[in-house]
Image 1 (cartoon, rainbow, N blue to C red):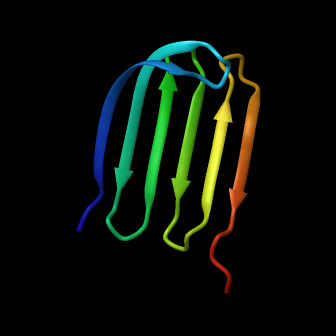
Image 2 (image 1 turned 60 degrees about the horizontal axis):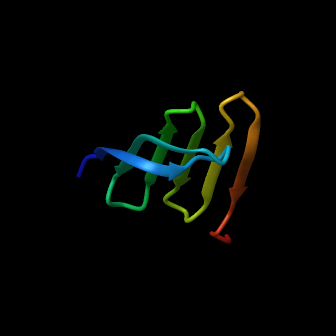
Length: 79
């Protein structure tokens, strides 16, 4: 089975900078455990969440001025 992607427009959501703005959210899922969600706000802020097949999660949040607010990779899977 292939990867399924979906783009969603949203309105009036709080961006990482604190402004309430519109934006786009792109979601992708391969039905085998990989999930990607990339949110782009009209102010320029961005948030990307990636959940991998092994259960680990990577979250990266960037302020509209380019400052990285969060860049975290948490391993949920233990070998």
